[in-house]
Length: 199
Image 1: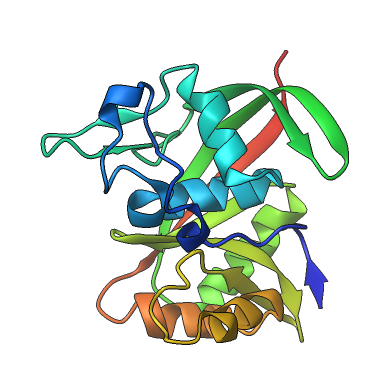
Image 2 (image 1 turned 60 degrees about the vertical axis):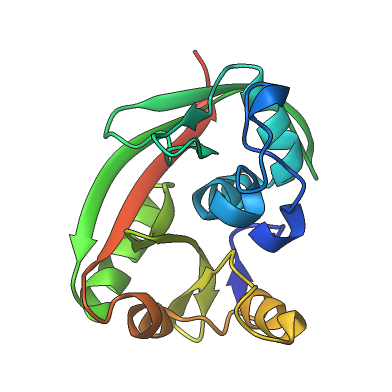
């Protein structure tokens, strides 16, 4: 098994980490726990703590309020070619300054076989992949037994959360599992991101 990332995180660990730019937008649902699956994937992709990333991006007014008053990241960058700039992050390797995350491509893929080919191609291009459907995001996190696996940031749906955490860490959530869980009635979307220093 080969993990591409060093730090699995669950959005359920961040019940009190709010996706807000200003303290007056702090509300029960404006947190990573309720609306932060994409944000948690982004944090894992960057190998950075989600609470730290939320704090840094709030300084840049990254979060937006919708019609219902829910503040979230709007899955940014969400349009091909868009990017976000992060002044610095603290990773297990140390401090990295001036990081740019750019959305390179978005595709819908209807089968496991096509998805495996796509993931392999994009990984060989040094791109990072967040995938899922309209309601949930997951991170393509590595390879095991000649198949790829994902990390699911939602570990709230089973009584014993430790079981779900271990499934993620042990690479048990394969691409076939992804399609069984999240692609029954629709194609799975793959978003390919580039991470590099700002120039």
